[in-house]
Image 1 (tube, rainbow, N blue to C red):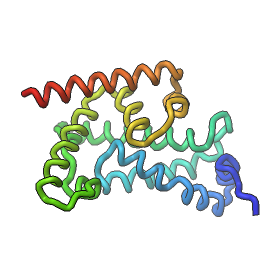
Image 2 (cartoon, rainbow, N blue to C red):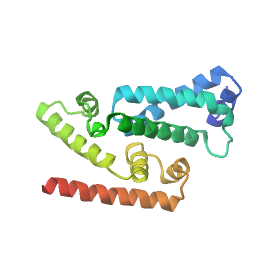
Image 3 (cartoon, rainbow, N blue to C red):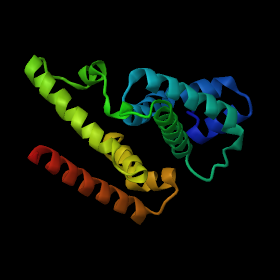
Image 4 (tube, rainbow, N blue to C red):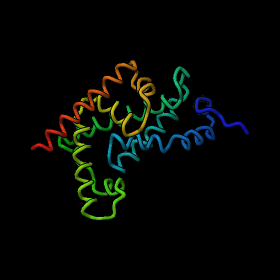
Length: 188
């Protein structure tokens, strides 16, 4: 049996074929979850937004025009839904909510067994993520997609609807800003 392309599954989802939608979810659920987690940092929020992403895909699949790859279209939705959620939370709490990373989420990121090393890694991760969160929005999006999600510059350009050189510039500036912020933090 020939495997259907992501684009074909998306088109069939738009035509109401639930089996195609299930296959699409199966192919993209980990990538969508990881993309959302890269922005949200909390498992509960990530699960909620990932579900919203797939609901949106199911509802809007018929609008997919095949002008971009299905994966690019899906990543764009995941990024936009994550950012919408962050904006909503920011308005909702008006505090340093996003600088708080739960200990449980950080434990999931650590492979070390020694409690002292785990604590040090959690502290470093918390500092790094707080500095990433302080980047301007476009820099943060490009940086997270490339460095955390491992997405190519070309695909980021498609997701963000920017030129390749603009993405390269955003990532360069993000790295420069992070380096400066982390140097300042560790000097003080």
